[in-house]
Image (tube, rainbow, N blue to C red; front, top):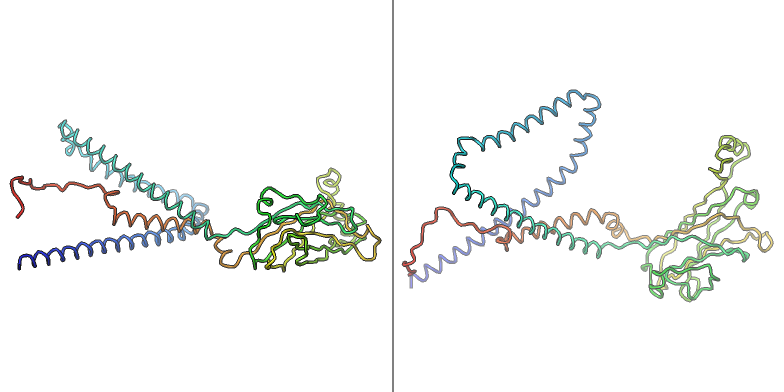
Length: 377
């Protein structure tokens, strides 16, 4: 009875020692992983000043820098030569005369190369899996902002020319052929393309000739209507604009200095106006289409009082919340750190729980031969 209690106690002690040793090994691996990340971050922070320092040394004192680099390379070459020629001493290579020992060394070398390749394949598999999981996580947590860039084709048959930019669909809007849906927009017809409670930043670019008509026209107004799928106006934003003023003396001087590019056609007498339209927030009713209108001046007769245009384009971008915007801007850095952390975690788990997958079993040297006739008692 005492013997059974003693064996049970010894087994319990062995189990505790085993779990304690594994816990200590796991803690050591975690500490080494943290040290590796800290050292890598420190190296990334200290490398630019170090490189800048030696670039300045090369510029201001090139001969001393060359001598320092030569001494550094000679010291490294001396260390490597000592390692090679110290281990390859002719007196220590006398065992090469023994063919059996040479075959044994070649066998061990081949076996070592095989395990090196095997361990490399296992580590590569862990790295690929961590990269795949990191990419999946980034795709799940990083929200891409909604961006649309379209060229505007204004319909000048109306008193106030208008153009349409589809967000999801313009099926309920009378576009009169000026609105063309892409394949992607036709797929998301009827759905919400812009998330709710997100702001829209709209940039309207217009290229106008510096003609006498546009100068005389002066101020004109642009309106952007946000339309629902059934053609109802959700909200509107207006913005007045005009050509930038330049007096006649300034204009003559600029023309004199740019006479050759103007004559050759390299430079044109144009101005590009970029209007920033902000303040719209997506609400319960999703925005399906944008309607851009150049409003007619009130004092002009119908068909007049609108500017002459060479080209016009519209850019729409949704504003992400602060944290989502930070994640989107730093998605590549987050992908690298998440993948690195996953790789180190997978490596630690494999070393602790699946050690034979990476570290092969080795037979202990000087093992006493077992006696098959001896039985356990």
